[in-house]
Image (cartoon, rainbow, N blue to C red):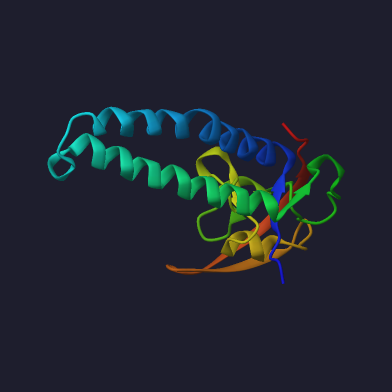
Length: 161
C-alpha cells in the first residue's frame, strides 16, 4: 500500500523547484568539482575530492527523497477546504489552558511544517489532536513534557500562497 504524502499546492511547487535545481544545477556543479579535484592527483589525501563526493551523495540522496515524495504526493487545495472543522490547510487558533498563551498554526504536511513560520504538521501530536475538532473544543495533547490542554478558539481558512 502506498502511503500518500499530504501537501499544499505551494508546498508541492517548492518541492518540484528544489528537485529541478538539484538536477539541473547542483548535480552538474558537484560533478565539475569532482573532475577538478581528480586533477589534483593522489585521491587518498585529496580533501577536495572527498568533500565533493560527500556532497554528491547528499545531493543524490535528496533527489531520490524528493522524487519519492512527489510520486506519493496528495496535493490538497487549501482554498477548497471546509472551515467548520480543523482539517489540512486550516488556520487554528489555540489557547494553552495552563499558560493562557495563544498560538496560531496552519495545519500542513510534514515537509511544509515550520513552527517559526506558523505551520505544524497534521501528523504531529498537536496536529493529530486538532484534526476533526471544532471551535470551542478542548484538546489534550500528549507531549514529551506531559499532557498539555488546549482550547480551540478559532478555525479559519487560509488561501494558497
